Image 1 (cartoon, rainbow, N blue to C red):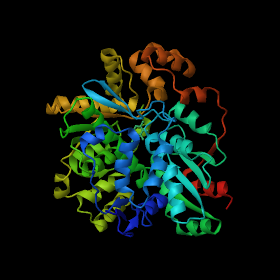
Image 2 (cartoon, rainbow, N blue to C red):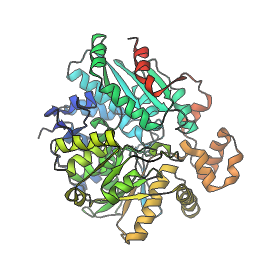
Image 3 (cartoon, protein in one colour):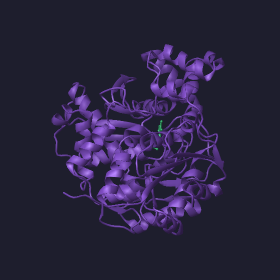
Image 4 (cartoon, protein in one colour):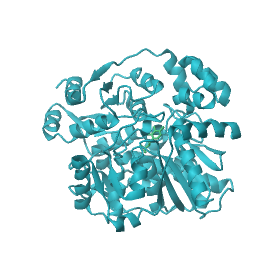
Length: 495
Ligand SMILES: *Cc1c(COP(=O)(O)O)cnc(C)c1O
C-alpha cells in the first residue's frame, strides 16, 4: 500500500514520502501528514525477536513507501551502528514501577539522536531519488538538543549545509558547549537574543519567504528542516516505542497484546506524537501521558480544550521542554478534527494572530487517549532524589518531569497498567541540576568536577560526548537579534 502525504493546512496533496522529507514543511506552512495510517504486518511475537534495526525497518518501510528496501536498509544500517554505545540502541531500564527506555545512547546523549542519526541519510537519498541538484540547507531552531544532534548528523555530509539557531542563555552550559565546538565545514551556529519560540518562529518565517526561496534557487540552494516538523523525524521515532513493547514481550514482562501506557516528557509534541502514530499502526498502547514542565501550555490544553500561548515563558532546569508553541500538536489537532484542513489552518492562524485557539467538544472527546501531566521544579528535583535513593538510578531533569507526572497519574487514577517512560537525555547533559537534586553539597564543584562526581554517584561511565567537550575549542560565536535571523542566513550562504 502506497502512503502519500498532505499538508495539515490543505495546500498540498498526494506528496510521496521522499518529497515530504526533502521539503520539511508544506508550502502553506502546514505539516506533512500521512493520508492514511499503514498497519504493521509483523506480529508482536515476530517483533519480539527482532534487532532494533529490523524493528525500525518494519515500522519505517510502512510509512516511507517510495524508498526501496535497499535504500531504507542502507539508511537504517548507516544510522544505528557503533555511533551508539550499546548494540541494543535503545535499552530498557526498570525503575520506579516503570520501564525507562533510554533514548540517549547516541552521539549527543539525548533522544534527538534517534531520529537525527538517520535523517541525513533519508534526506540525501530523497535528493538523489528526486534528482535534486541544489545544495540542501538545513535550517533548525533548537531548545538545546536538536541543534547539536542535527549538526552531528549532517556534519560534512556532501551536498548539505546546516545552520542552527539557539536562544542565548536558554540552553544548559553543556548544550551550549556542545554546539559552539561543533566540527564540520558545513556547520553554522547562531545564537539569538530571544527565547526558543522566537527562534522557531523566525525559522518558520524564513521558510515561508517565497522571494528568498527564488533567490536561493538561483544560487543553487534549497532549504529543508531537521526540526520535528519534518515527517522524517517522526517516523524513526515511532520505531522505538514498537521496540520497547517488543522487548517487554520478549522478557515476559507483558503478554503479546497486553496494553501498556506511555509517558513522554514533552516540548514540541514530536516524541509523544510518534508513540501515537505507532498506536495507529496497531500497537496495543493505552494512555499517553503528556508530561510538561512549568511551561504547562499542553497540560492546560488537555484539561480545557483551549490552547493559549499568552503567558510568561519560564526558564526551567529542563530547557529542551521550555516551549510555548508545540508545533507537532497541529498534526494531532488535524487528526481529531476529522482531517479538516481548512479548520486546522484557521486554528493555526488564530494561534499566530491572537495567541490562542479552541477545539470543539467532539474533538475533545477524541483526546481520551491522552492525559496531561506536569511537574514543578521542586517535584522534578524531589523525583530525581527519590528514584536515586530508592533504585540507585540517576535520571536527567527532562526524564524526571515524566517520572513525576507518572507518579501523580498513578496516585490520581489508580491505573496500574505497565508503563514505559521515555528517558530523553543522559543525566550528564544536565549534571549540575541533577547533582543539586541529589545533594546540594555538589553545587560548589566546577562543571568539570561535576562530571567526575556524577560518575561516582551513578556508576555510569562518563560518555564520550562529555569527554569531547572537555577539550574541544570553540568554533562558533555568532550572535544576532531575532529580526536579523534572515540576514544571518544570507550572509552565511553568501547571497
Ligand atoms: C527535545 C527534547 C524533549 C521534548 O521532545 P519533543 O519531541 O519536542 O516533545 C524532551 N527531552 C529532551 C531531553 C529533549 O531534548
